[in-house]
Image (cartoon, rainbow, N blue to C red; front, side, top):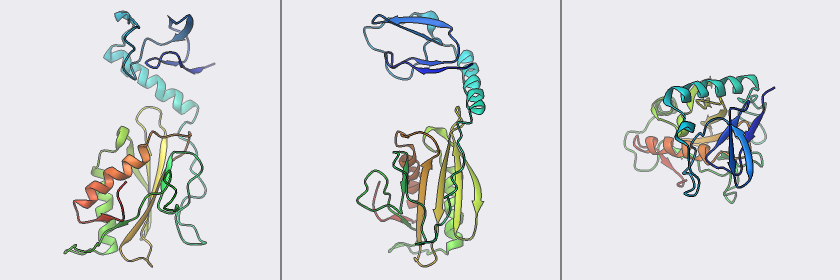
Length: 227
């Protein structure tokens, strides 16, 4: 039986699966893999060099983590409410968790709101059609390196809608990112970016959208506000 334990006493230690080493810190014994540096180690903690993970061992550990993610389906199930809603036509709102942003949210919701984009803003000389704008967006999706090196995969596309799954490189976690080109709103693009599992995303979804917006601005797009 696998056990997943995160050490609260040692922020620089990641513990998973069966015991391989025992570390004693402040009279607390923690069983875990050799130390996996996730943050700067405290100055008062002495690190045994034999506990350092070599590059090859790190690759092997990454493979074990990926297997663990597959066994326990950490990618999560695709939400049934994705897509353009009917009443009123819009993308879905966010859940209460802090791992989602959406242009459908109220502007006063600072946790979940994000401003729409305009691909033909005032001042753009080479105006483009909706079809051309979607191609520009797809090119940015495929060429922009997203935060945390998530891998994008376009899984759904219509004449006015695009859904992309972003998957993390180790745990296989999946974020669903949607883009909608409403026909009744000239040159406007609505979007929603949300993680399938967990309660926090450390701003990955917001940073992903910002990275794409900055690239789209180079092509003449604009945002109603900055995030």
